[in-house]
Image (cartoon, rainbow over all chains, first blue to last red):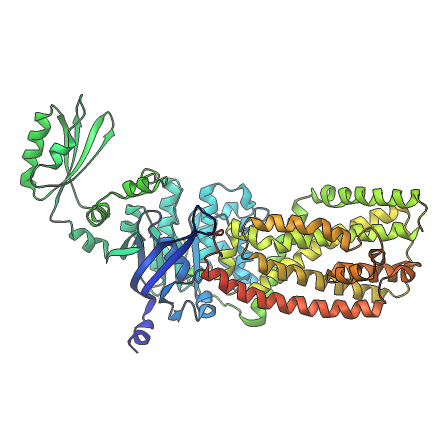
Amino acid sequence: MTTETHLDDLAIKTEALSRIYKIRGAKKGEMRERVALEDINLSIPRGELFGLLGPNGAGKTTLIKILTTLLSPTRGRAWVAGFDVVRESDKVRPRINMVSGGETSGYGLLTVRENLWMFAQFYGIPSRQAHQRIQTLLEMIGLADRANTKSSDLSTGLRQKMNIVRGFMTDPEVLFLDEPTLGLDVQAAREVRAFIRRWMDENPSRTILLTTHYMQEAEELCDRVAIIHEGRILACDTPDHLKQEVQHEAIFQLLVETEQPLNSLALENLPGVLRLHHQWMNGGLQLEISLAEEGVLPLVIGELERQQAHLRSLQKRQPSLEDVFVQLVGLRMEEVERERGNGYHPNTQE
Amino acid sequence: MSVVTATTPIRKNSGWRLFLQTVIGRAYPRVIGQQREKSWMFFEVLLPLINVAAYVYVYRAIGAPEDYVGFVVIGGAMIAFWMNVLWSMSSQLYWEKEQGNLALYIISPAPLMAILLGMAVGGMIATLLRAGAIIALGTWLFNVQYVVMNPWQLLAVFVLTMVALYGLGMMTASVFLLFSREAWHYVNLAMEPVYLLSGFYFPLKNLGFWVALGASIIPLSLGLDAMRQLAFRSGPSLGFLSVPLEIGILSVLSVVFLVAARWLLKTLERLAREEARLTENRR
């Protein structure tokens, strides 16, 4: 069978994977359905750091829950480390681990070291080896000096570092990182990302599935990225290849000074203007404008002058995954979040 | 910075070794937690003793046999186990879910039965200390006289009661896997009736045969009754059933509860996975 042949080389494979949630309606006894995942087909080879990029509510966590045997799919199948996540969950579990952003696992009364030792026991790691490994990983992530601190006394960042060690210490074949840097400050997030990259570089057979809604994180860490929106995968490729899709566009960042509201519709309707986003920044209005070609730029500047907006700076920008997302979805990620009413804070991280 | 040891392959036990490690691992926070949170001495020893004292003074005021004072002290100590089973076993998986631990338990290779057993063993050890403190203080304060003719039988009854009681706790914990916040209400609901039906503060026999028989499904009822028969002079005359019969019933209850817990855990885990309740509250 073709599937079996490929499974040996694949860390994760899904076939037409779907999940529909039944949600209680407002009226008594009323049940509604919400499609969280729809026909997800993924093949992730061993050794890859694969990213799932999408806004909150896109289906990233649902997919992780299915792959980590916490949730059954409504339709379709999934394999992790070569085993079916529903029928062979007992074979999947010793081979995986998971770390989620903002998780509060463990017991506050126990120290960092004790919490980690406890979780090591659930994986059958002998105590002595567990303690050695915990010490090494704590040193690597810069938490060794807090090893004997009660976990309830740790800050969010330090607690997340403890969680990271918990996930990595069992040396899983496939590690699931669900928004691992969520809520961390810039420095802590950078350290966690460096740790992840180093862990991958140490052993080419390790696989990570990372979900994030931070574009830069996906770009910096991932070998391949799948963009997921409303339960469907819209694109899947290396970050460079994905960006090439929008490479033909000329993207400019303009900072303008204006005393009257800008008529953005007039700008958007100019021939050759593909997309326009604007926000107030540093006392001026920042425009990000995607053009079909560079030659359209004089038209834009002319329109700005006509509206008595003074150009303070102009910069050509390389396309990012954000541009890919916008091209695929039609909205920026924070706009999707805002529409959903989630508290997306694009500036939480660099 | 050396990273060599982080890449060293690690040995992972499976089978009975993993089961045992899991039990010890999960029992650890229960036992160690008690050492670090000293407030239990007040809330779980002194407060129950106030309740015990109330019954002691009532019995003394009405001139009840002095053994009744001992009955109340033992009952007060056994309440600690019931509270532990209710709050730290039955509803525990709900709290673990809220805290984010349940998902990590499930995705680990550790058997859930071992996790529950670890909770039970840890809870039992921690509660033993509280119950012991209640008995010691109660005995000293109220001058309780024990007449133990067969200490081994008494120990066997106690152990059997614990196995059956914590088996019941493991069984209900499995059921609570499906519940969300309702767990809290169900636990509250179960508390007071069991105080009455277990005969914590009076001989079980006083409930009348049929009610006492029905109450025997709660392992504490028969366990407490048998322990009183074995620890006090007037115990046998106030006992509900004979001690050997009560031991027999407790043995059956232990097996039934443990087997049911195992089956329920497996079945309800599958159901919870299908209905997305392992990590989230009821949708």
